[in-house]
Length: 614
Image (cartoon, rainbow, N blue to C red):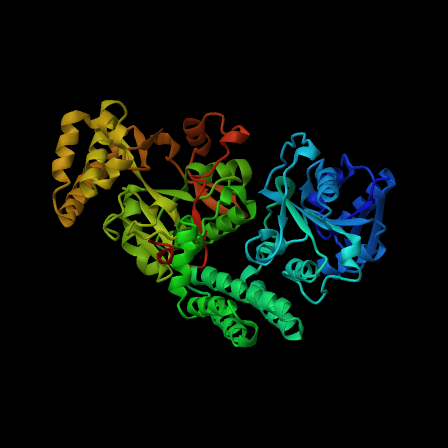
């Protein structure tokens, strides 16, 4: 008769993932199983889902209990388990359809009482290929391999344990992080423990934001180091005591290394060093060849640079990991909450700019996507990530003379004159002590706080006049900073031709201040057109781009539109503006085109861009 396997699933706040997990257990090719779902006081729909699953499958039992943590939930399952073998599955993960079949085959073939499989960390469900369980390779894990080099010691999922080896062993309910490794040390140091491992990936670990392993991770690791040392102090067996002490040392060293990457983790580093000192004082356990290991650990404790060097030598990819952790990149398009937080932050900036305009009788209008959002959504376009306003050129110039004084030290009014490396012909109002930058701009010596764009409105004539003005604008921007051409090579070449490009390269040799002066003089040519003789208005958006609209769009009193609950100004005939700009502006684009201005952008509302620069 087949052995009965008990699968224990602790459940708390995972209603989005629970069905996938339970379905993967129910669908096991190994059928002689009991499934114990432990509702650990979950406040969502998990309790109801558990009961529905119990109605569907008679092998499922449900325990509803007050919240006590994952250790308490697993213990509750172990206390009522009837199986000859026990397996643990976290409720946000799932298992291969043949997971239990392969595990039992390996157990019978090797006579082991602990069987472990490899796992795959993933965000998406994986297609599972059929496995011939008798042909799955495995190897014995024993001696120093168990606690030195085998990563399986850190977790209880992805395994099956013979109930006979567990006996009265339970999880420490006082420990909220690292409880798996403590449980494994107790079980795997038993004299009768026999472990086999297969490299076959049969367990799927779900990577999700907010899961237990990613919240306050470093402080929890420090606490785990202290717990290891507490266990070591209570342990009488010298060999087991040494395992706890080495676990504390390794965890403290790795946590100190990770904390050292960031600039604001001095307290964590201090606590790690305190744990290391305490662990290294236990000299009595380091007998014989252990003294060499002790000397090595002491060297790593005293010289963190050596520890870092050895880690990077063993895994060169850590250099890239260091850069990412020191300057984390938030992909806000994939995280609506962060995008919304950014939008509301920019709304506050917009209102500050509007206040300056109203106090100084400066005309402004919502522009481009911001105007479209006001008309179509009465606020931000849900996937938009910036704010655009525009001003008639006379008002634009007036704004530049008063803005910095009126906005104060919280803001920086960025133009090609106030920021030498800024290469646009319009203005950005930046919030100091914030960050909004592309990863590839981290080396650029330029203000990269969160911004709103302010575009000048310039009178122009259509046709050849506009074409020549675009050429002129391209030329004057390149004179101001040569890097512009590197970002717009094809556009410049098309507008200026080979001889124009040659001239630009010659101009690029001029000193920066002279190029700045020429830039200002040449922009005056664009800005000083006679409005009475022009039929169109152009918005100067970028280095070589403009938007052109009939002059009547702006003639008359500004329209008032609602934007995020605030009434703001728009062009007089904003409907015609939006038709010229977007066509059928009330119809949202296809889902695949609903994108902001970039996928990977470093966003920080509280820390200066200077902390992210390299």
